[in-house]
Length: 114
Image 1 (cartoon, helix red, strand yellow):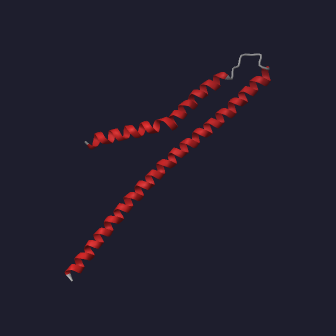
Image 2 (cartoon, rainbow, N blue to C red):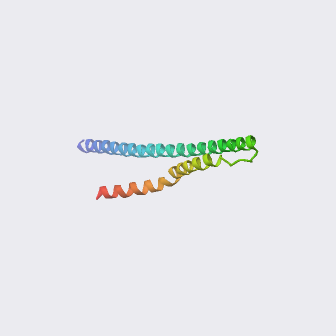
Image 3 (spheres, rainbow, N blue to C red):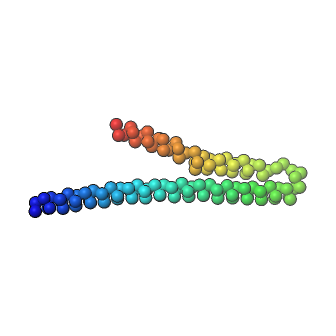
């Protein structure tokens, strides 16, 4: 009788333990999903930015060409270059900083654990 009670108690403890571990795995999975969704949204944002950049600058080139016939200074290069710098910064922010952020986070985490 005592053994049966002890086994039921241990079984209950084991079930609670595995439920807790499953909860942690679910939390980690949820966190990874949120992180993946955020990265995907940022990448989509970059491609939308790129599409608008191309569309607007092609429109500016057409305006320049059809209003002046190409006889005047190509003023469209100023917004093309200026916005291109911003687009390049957006690209770096979306694609290049993740690895750096991950490395720095791991480094700081290791420092704090020591």
